[in-house]
Length: 192
Image (cartoon, rainbow, N blue to C red):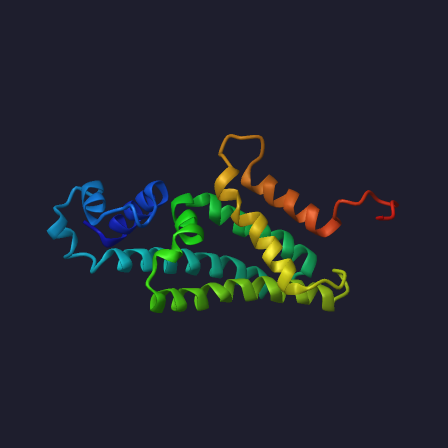
């Protein structure tokens, strides 16, 4: 039994039942181990949750930082970052759901550590928005508010997006990019 298999099974159960409703016995059953044997691979349910959160953040950070640190235009970076982020959320929905919904299950010390790591992802989006403003490609907006909006739109996909639905994840990302880059006002029409 590999630790990664245990962590992946736990992510699936946490997504389905929630962190607090999941027992170590549930996890042991999912990977066909005795509960006592499970403890040879992991220390605790907190240990598993933290590993899931760290793994998910590492993947998102790598995806987004690769785009943000590139030499592309801010407009293209925004499109590619949206595409990378939505793709990652869709690629492993169990990890994404646990990352976005279950982090509150961490004890206060571990939660503070996690939030500091999560804030690095937020900073990448803020950096991208500020770069677009500084380059004159984006109008002057609040980078913090804008990054929260960008993340909120994408993160909420875990509740409504379905493979085989009307849109692919890439099409959703393009729709988000168009919405953020062009807004809702029709060309030539002045907002009230």
